[in-house]
Image (tube, one colour):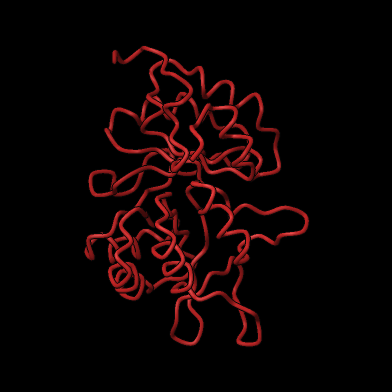
Length: 228
């Protein structure tokens, strides 16, 4: 494939559509067991949040309390393996110092389709030293990826709506690493025009793209991702 050739829509793999905090709706809470399991059983990838509570890893976007009905990280990994899931797990690291515990848990369950991201830069070093795939963020606030040579991929965000993600993705494509793109609806902006621009962006190989979205089913239809 030549660098400037447009690719077919189906080149965005279903497993690379990252369901943001699961496949949720008005009746199914984000990051709930049902939301997480629905996304994985539908063949999607998954973005979710990892923290620690009383010395164990849990799934929670905000700091949990002991009285909360928290989901153990082990539950997610056991579900993933028990159901022969294949979607990419994008693990948003919300607390420092979790590299050793998370590496041990992932190794114990034999989960290899994952990457970690959004930790502090000093904390990222611990994940890299543990041999874990870590993605480095690029945005309007971080124009160059930290530890670009060492990271396994790029997390491409756009917090304000003014950052040109599509051209940035083409430029970053030269690193030869996967690029996970944050869809605008995660920041409460319309996504339709962006998806069209992304799909038609010359010089971008969609087979190396991941899309983090609140609308995984819609994304699968739009990008022609094969069903299970």
